[in-house]
Length: 95
Image (cartoon, rainbow, N blue to C red; front, side):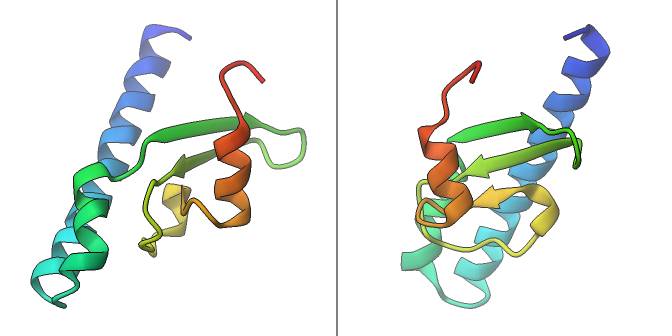
């Protein structure tokens, strides 16, 4: 991975992280869902999985440790008990 690609990935991760935290803040402070969204704000997601496919290109998924939902599909956010989340939890580096 060259320097430009690293910079692009870091920016993408920070942008998604900001979106998740801002959404959790909104749900906590505007909708009063503190119990459900406080862990999401605190931990956001713990693992990013990047899969290179032949047909769909590069797919990026981010595994959360909480079951709170985040509606932005393009972020690749996955809850731990969703099918994608279960797949992400079993994968390790280099597979």
